[in-house]
Structure formats: C-alpha cells, structure tokens
Image 1 (tube, rainbow, N blue to C red):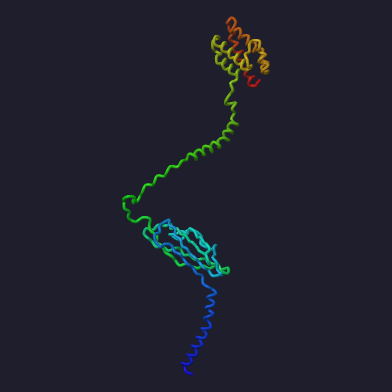
Image 2: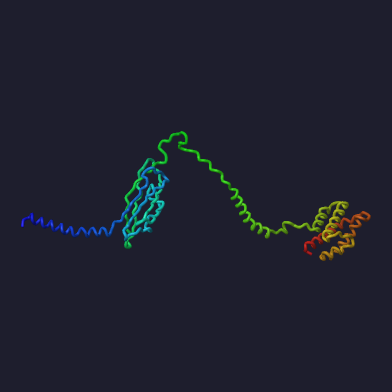
Length: 308
C-alpha cells in the first residue's frame, strides 16, 4: 500500500468521525443557549454639570440563571465626573431590564470625553454569583460657559442676584407670641404664689393711718394738732365700726370687734374730750396729753393688726 492510498483512507475515517460528533455538539448548544445582553446607551454628547445620564440594560439569562438584585451596585460617587444616582429593575419577557442613572458632578475647563463607570450584570446560578461585564460607553461633558464671554446683553461674567420675593412671617410671629405667653404663664403663677405681698403692699389700716397723721403733727401748735389728730381718731373709729361712733356709743365698736373691749374706757374718754374740743368752750388738752392720745392710737393699731 503506497503513501497516497494510506492518506486517503485516514481522511475518510476522520470525516466519518466528524459526522458523528457534529450533531451531538449542535444538540448541546441548542439545549444550553447563551445569556444575551442588550444595552441602550445615552446620548454621547451635550452633557453639563447636573445633567442625568441613563443606560438601559436588558439581560436575557439562561433558564438556570436569574438576576441577583441584592448584588447590584449601591448609589454613590462613581469616579471624578459622575455619581450613581439610582438603579431600577423590572421584569420583561424572558429577562430583566435595568435602568442605571448617573449624574454629572464635575465641570471641565474644556469639552472632555469620559467613560461611564464599568458595570457588570450580577447573575446567580446554582448558588454561585456570576458577573457579566457590559461594554464600556463614552460621553462628552462640556464646561458651563465658554472661555470668552461677550460683555453685552445678559452675557456678562457676573450678574446680580434676582431679588427674592418677600415672605410673610406674620403667622409664625403670632405663633411665637402665643408660645412665649404659654411658657410665661406658669412662671407668673409661681411668682404670684411665692411673693410676700403682705410685706410689699401693706393695707391701709384705719388706726395705723390715724397714728401716722397724729405723729406727723406732734410738734405743731394746739390749734393744728388737736383738731387734726381727733378727726383722724374719729375716722378710724367710724371705718372700724362700720358706722359713725358718737360719744357714749363705744359699745357699737366692741360688739363688732371684741378685741377693742379693753380699750373701750380710753376710747370713750377721748370721745368725750373730742366733744369738749369741738363743741365746748374751745380749750385744748394739755400738751402732755398728746402722748396719751398717740399711745391709745398705737394700742388700737396693734389690735387691728392682731398683735394684742
């Protein structure tokens, strides 16, 4: 057998083996189709700071794999130029659709081409995590203003801020007043309850007033002292008794205020003395009796204060 015949037989044998293997391989590929990914890219130009850039990625996994939602990237800074704002996902016929949204967060001095952050679709199959990378994409970012600005119309480098409209604060101010008033009421009530009013504001007691008036005139002449002092005594007796007390009617005072019983003889004597001064011969008591009148008024003042 020559060499040519041997080569021909070997070639026929290899072809026969290839015919047996090829149908089996075709059946395996049909049974396990590959995962497909389609990407809808954003507009590649015209972006500035603050603009939103979105990629729409649709993945069609095999029957054994599914999207691993918990393994998707978290929002945050994604490089010097972009920030990942959000990732939304939804189910579509035979797969899942992802909407990955970025925001431009930097300003170049001139137009700049940047690459979107690398992204891989996380898939879970048989308890294992697989990441299928997505082809990179590029966009251009422009500066906010051109390098040279014409100084006319509104195209100036610095513009005045627009005056903010006034905001009415009347309702808030009224609410603050009511709040302060409500906070002060307990404090005012506490001050009122604990203030010693009886020490700060002394009541105008009748005999105390009469004693002050008599004491103020103790060194005056008889014509000035005795009429004023006796009238002050009469006013104190009338106010205390609740009616006019005439000579011989001191019992009216004692009935209403029994504490004055021990002073009744002195009060009766001074009422008689007052009648003599105003309706008698017109003479005045001796100068030394001034102290006796003021002593009686002081004792009556002590009684009205509850001291005696």
